[in-house]
Image 1 (cartoon, rainbow, N blue to C red):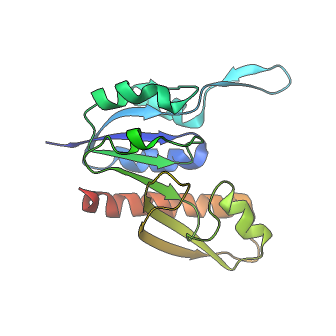
Image 2 (image 1 turned 90 degrees about the horizontal axis):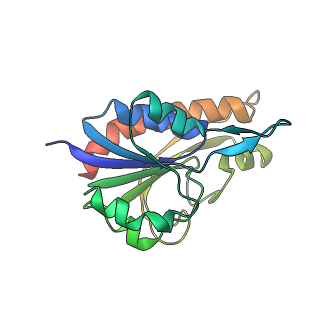
Image 3 (image 1 turned 60 degrees about the horizontal axis):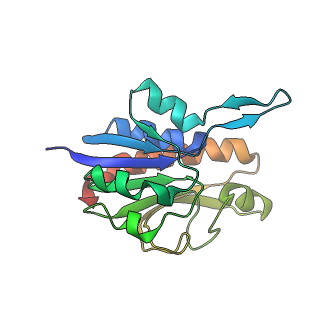
Length: 184
């Protein structure tokens, strides 16, 4: 029987993780992403990149204003694991503790360095020569759980945020495919 997984993510970086999960031997039962927002001069409502990708694969999507309101829905999914990447909200412990195997986060830095938002930007601004991906257990405090797997990649002189973003997204996808089975 395939393990039941819920993915929580929002921006383009998280789409790389979602795509990797779609190739794994799991059942991706739901996606949680931020609500659609008005953007641009015309203030047109735009779906998140993760929602767009999820709908292509006909995966149910939840977009709560506050993730805590989904407690009953998450429990009803009978999950084995939650995987998050750049979701954008603190996830309450009662939701993190719902799946049989807990929750993991994919973070675009070599934790404990550059916890929180914009780790790719911070690494470039601070003149780092390497960055990486950390797969970690989720706990109540942001980016503070045990790091389970970590892999580094160089930051080249010619790199900008976009080139490093794309390379780290590829590395994160590779790591999910490699390490996800070990979490069960």
